[in-house]
Length: 86
Image (tube, rainbow, N blue to C red):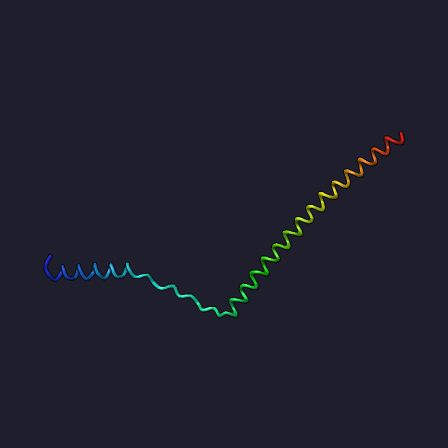
């Protein structure tokens, strides 16, 4: 390799190293305080809605379990009344 080729090779290596070292900046769009507050309020409203839906579903399931228990109790009392009347 002659002197000129060596110089080109070194400059290319340096340029490659500089390029590898450089991380492109991550540009994020500016979000104003008001917009951030709106987004936060919306997220909280969604979370509250999900929580309310889960509570309602749990209440419905509990209601069904209670209804089954009361039906079983009624059958038991009717059976006891029938035996008592015999």
